[in-house]
Image 1 (cartoon, helix red, strand yellow):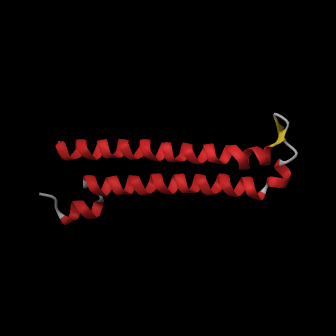
Image 2 (spheres, rainbow, N blue to C red):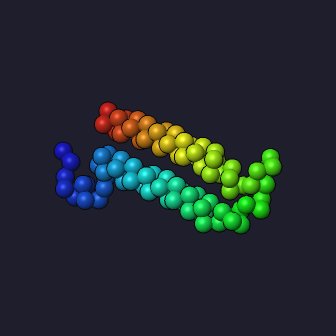
Image 3 (cartoon, one colour):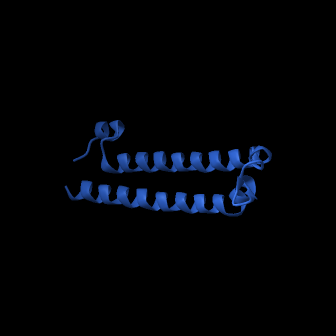
Length: 93
């Protein structure tokens, strides 16, 4: 039976699961904020950079950030599926 001491140390599968889930969520939110903030804050400077004849800031606002957000969602789904499998394996053992 699991003791309070194991729970306090974070040795329970559920505790490790939620710690990893919070860490993944925080990292993806930090990436989301960083990319969004940098793109918008430096939009004037990035306008000098051209891709296929369009300013980089326009490209990022029109398509690039949306694709980046979809990538973040896909990463989150993949990470959570992996964590769910790990938790299921821990409970089975």
